[in-house]
Length: 316
Image (tube, rainbow, N blue to C red):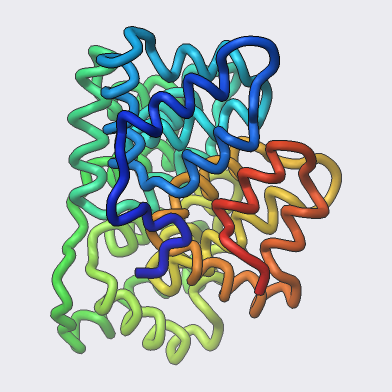
């Protein structure tokens, strides 16, 4: 397990529910107690507490948290209290239905989740909003970028490990001819190969591509495409090569420079803390020469910083 939040082997949902109520009842809120309780439990244990809170206290825990907390700190805590798939569903919907479209969020989730995760997202999205994820993508995005997102949202990538060397060579040639070799780019070829082939196969394709084009596939995508389409295909390539490194880069970009992209920072920290946060930390340190911990510390403050540092799980 490369998670920073692992949960506890035995706990009393009743006790934790009562402790949370106590932290919020009366004058002032004990934010430290809330952080302490929720970061020691994993997402399924938090769900048990949520149910117990309602049955034994007769109140909705998320409503209580929302009324006591505010800002980014509240968003992290509510994110932690949301079941994994539903959290992705809410984020995708926010990315499309808020003011303007958060293309980065759409790309990040759709490029990095497994077929099974995408299947669950689609099911829950439809139940929650009465329309399909694909319908919202189609109404909110356009042209080739839309087609890439629709393709990823079908969750139909080959997840086997079989590599057909001849086909890999052919795919590499195909990508070369669709981009570097011709005037104008045949984006459909890029999409068809990058969004459907299995990971082992694509890694072989990328090697073969370097041999043919004398440059990395990412450099070709950067020179041949632009905007959201470029970002989407780069994300697919990066997730195939090294998913934790992709998330490390997302975190770095969310914090470096002026202002913080809190949406991205919160989403990655909450959604990866129980999956591969230790790997992400390792890649972050390798790539940027500074620990993720020190970056968060320098970029955030107050309870928001405290809870993110707990999700980060330590200094490297």
